[in-house]
Image (cartoon, rainbow, N blue to C red; front, side):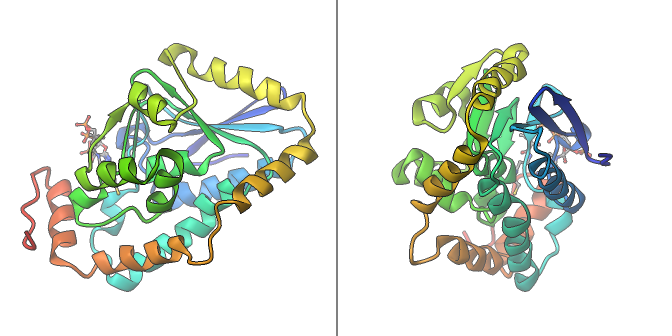
Length: 260
Ligand code: COA
């Protein structure tokens, strides 16, 4: 498997996917999302692969978000389409994959990066990891499932505060919140994830796939929060605040929101 934006490695029954755009802090552009879909699909079809570990290259970032430069000029319709397509192609896809996926959070996991880590079945973080959903600082909201999965994992009040403040939490706080299962020194992160993967590999692949299905079923509700998120995300793209927020990021200055 050859990818432009990913590095692939296999060790025994464990595959490691490394998102490899370190100069952009591994931000998720269209190509990366497509390649991740393809990589997960191929590994899931390979009977030798019993666990997948997802991480970011370099020692600074897991993923610093969706690639802001790609969507800064999108319209409302394009915004909705971005969220809907991304959720289907990657975030829901990973969450419902039959093969267990562990996020190894090796640094910043922000916006789409934290959303991707939350779509994985569980998370392990290095001590330097920092996590948050800073979208409202750009005049938009999380659009890859973050408004749904963050409250599921840490509770509604904590999620509301983190989303509204656009703040970041450190690894120890994330552990306390239950957002990550373990915090380890950065040098030990992959080894720790591989150790957990080896334990998983001792168990029935078929039963694990059924367990994933059953656990996920409990989080589906009749009113669809993910669809509501897509609609609200798209609506942000029609606002002057979104134009100002994304332009300010790309021009490396602080946003001055016209709606405030
Ligand atoms: N989209 C596009 N490019 C991004 C990015 C993103 N989400 N996050 C980082 N980058 C790029 C930067 O633009 C910069 O590129 P350049 O060198 O070509 O200018 C490069 O990655 C390095 O980032 P930089 O901001 O210089 O690093 P830093 O150490 O000063 O700050 C962060 C690190 C994570 C705090 C900062 O990059 C940041 O706030 N990123 C955006 C986070 C965000 O809002 N994510 C949600 C998106 S929906």
